[in-house]
Image (cartoon, rainbow, N blue to C red; front, side):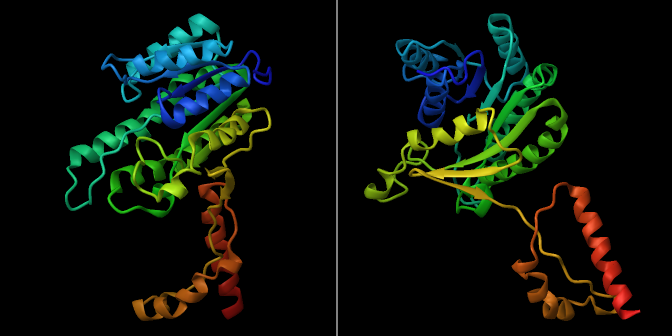
Length: 302
């Protein structure tokens, strides 16, 4: 146990097993008081898995409490946060880890399964963020970690619902960071890769052995710390940590008479030139980039 996060309170959703459990334990070892949110249980009792993790943390000398709120239910989430405030008086860290899978190819997927996965991952994360948002604003401090995925970033067969939810985390992260900037709130996303109950059997045994949930947790501790970056996507797996960049090429101006599919195709390689790519801080920056590029092209041809 350390005192790095002494006085900090963290909520970790889906913390009864797998990655969430490891994130919670790592934060507890760093000195945070941790809310273990999970609705599942090996004995079929709501919150049983969360209570087991609380016992682990208490055995380490830490403080934790179990909360079986359903993240997809905003009323349950707000009630959970109210209990945390009554107990500890603040919420400093939110790790949105809760998730489910309903994998099928899109041709065979029931739309109810599409909606359910989005409700837990994306809406559930938004529910939790909204429930702590004013608290963090008033404190002048907050660390929010959203869970994206390689499926959301790059696609994965049979996971259209999961990929859509995880890609949505990127838009949520970027906008919340803009709105939370002045209040000391840092919002980031993690793309973890670990063998858990959700990923069993997907990789060769020798590769799977390297992908432990414990190897992902240091990235969560970093993003929860005073040194946390902002609006950053960190990849983590097998002890390797990376940063995912979203960039856009400069673009090519096509005059009105040159916008047919054939002329568009002819210019596509220049449009795609990664050497011109750069970061854009806000959606408005794209508008200014487009108009500036068009204006330059018109001046050259005028």
